[in-house]
Amino acid sequence: MKVFLLAIMITAASISGLRRRSIPRWLAIAGLVFAPFLALSGLAVPLESDALYASLSVTLLGLLAWVAAITFVVARRAPVPVRASG
Image (cartoon, rainbow, N blue to C red; front, side, top):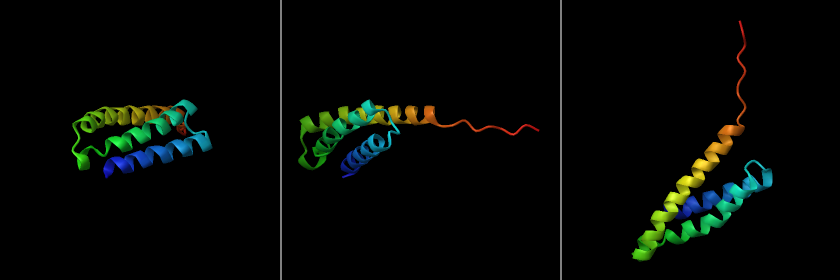
């Protein structure tokens, strides 16, 4: 169930990023392409499928890479606070 919720989160973040132009287009599209694969691999536990367990391992690494890329983009765009001198 958790994997399905993560797939929904990626979809929502990608759609929001496309609409608000807050993340690069390629990263939002990558999220939209990746989310269904993540949701499909989430069926590994209830179906007890070895193939889906293998895909779950790969898609969880993909999830980690996508989150790292989003973090990098957002952190790079964050404004640097200005210190008051004195």
